[in-house]
Image (cartoon, each protein chain N blue to C red):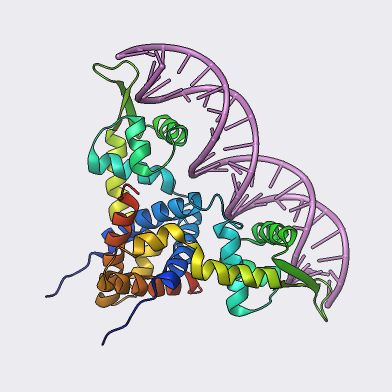
Length: 145
Length: 145
DNA sequence: TATTGTTATACTCTATAACTATA
DNA sequence: TATAGTTATAGAGTATAACAATA
């Protein structure tokens, strides 16, 4: 069975679905230790290692001043540390702290309670579709442009 | 080939992917006539017809005061209209205007330029995965809880 | 002069609490 | 008293513009 996907309609539908799910996910974390914005930055540090604020802003696709604020909040909470760049006095190296690493592990394995409960109701085929979609979306977002 | 999906890791990955894509989509609409929040509300009115602010807030999964603001901005822009409820003086009926309807059609068919260009690079299998994912996500968000 | 990062400022989105009008 | 909606207020997230420090 072949189904031709209308990618223009899909672009619109995907946009709305993503925005609505993002709204849910953010609002359901009111009690969490870190917001999704903070968690996203920490996940990048965990996956790719220490980097400068500028590099982190680029990876997260936000402007540098936005990342300055995220880093400041994570620093205040003790989840990241800052160190001077060894050779370039303008730059700074941001690293996950021990606490930050522990939090990431915790979040990854047990934190997304609401979504976990939702996913528990899906069958294997649906989970596979979502998994494929995550890979595709990640690639889309990471392409240079 | 059978692959067992770890739904806990998927929950985390999906959260991050969705939040990042939502960030992209919002920032790429700086020049658009309506924001994604506004477009989402209008899409619901288009799909389900006129309704009260309270019902629209419930469908969009935001609190009533948030929807009041969205409606006020759409009203100011001429994309929706307000009418008194025929029998209940407390309630209000919100309808898409002609202009609003036209905008929805326009957005659906030609507006998501960036995402369209991204989707154009995908093959049919990948598009199908995304389409499935949109259906699943929509169901997740729409479940009562 | 160019680059890195921060500060100052402002706008959007969303929420909770308190209020008004109507039922 | 209960419900629908709005107003008041606040906080998170993000942006652009201007600045400081260093290369």
